[in-house]
Image 1 (tube, helix red, strand yellow):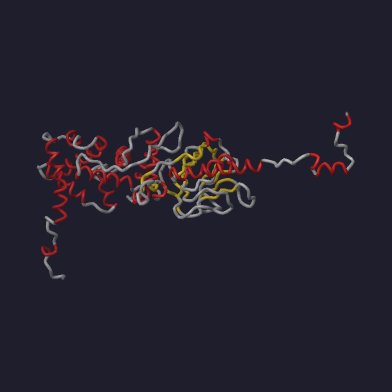
Image 2 (cartoon, one colour):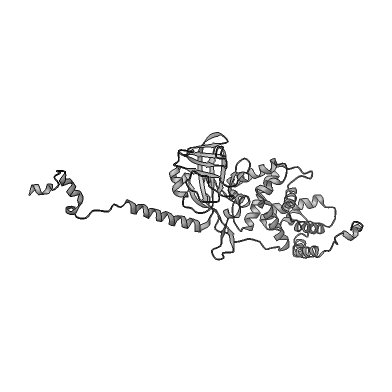
Length: 414
């Protein structure tokens, strides 16, 4: 009731939830006290696995800056209790971003780049993936940092790449409640990268965050109820297979699974996620889980929804080639039939490279290969001409004779 005193409505400090969280922290706090007899940033960081040293350093600095209590270990415990009770994505983003901001809330580009790279490293740690960060990875992460720096609020991370923060929180929560243990999941073999390849580990990681699970998770062969993260399979690479509609068609069609296509031109890389198989048609294809994403300058989802792609090579009623974007009259990207030019934002560029990656796991790729084998056999069968029987019994012989054509040339020399 409105007349109740504030004391009656206050939550007791030692609630069961608080006690449980506190007891979960005990093993870590004991380890911290053993390892940090001399309280320094380096000793504090060494309490965590090396992958998390950058994040641990940021936490230590926050403790030093905001501490109003002389007992360092009590301050650590209170902060970690707060962290364990963060539930909403918005609150997680606010907290972890604050570790990389100045005391007055300002963001510097170098700090935000470190924030993104730390999120990337900890995500791979959770997935149990060993990976050396490449220059291509850093360029991709730079585009995410640019998005954070230019957005007026934290909505950019919520809508574009929430995994950056959720995996960071998951990793830290695991370390402070189960020190020495990891929360990794089984993952298929890592992404193999070649020189100039458009898809890199960082862009795959961003796709796992930005796109629905159907693109990055496949059903386990041993358990139909279990899914696992899957790397993409190369279907078509214009640098290796040849840059033409014919080559594109040969390598991509008959793959009955979702795909991610990356298109490079000028200084841009644009990706289109297609949740249905590619097929030649005058109609637009793709379901509700399609998306068009810019990977360069600023990582951004610019369009989502059904009818994202048109692939036309026959009809003269609509432009031939590949059209990407839900508005057929004003597509985001269009590739002309010769696959030499790209139109982007009403401006023409030379197409540098195009890659199509299958997201349906090994089963979808195997089914495509079987389908290609069947088509090849059918084609070879159709090429074979049924030979006639004996020439003397062939009806063509009689037709020639009726026309006065001499056909038995050999008999004239007898």
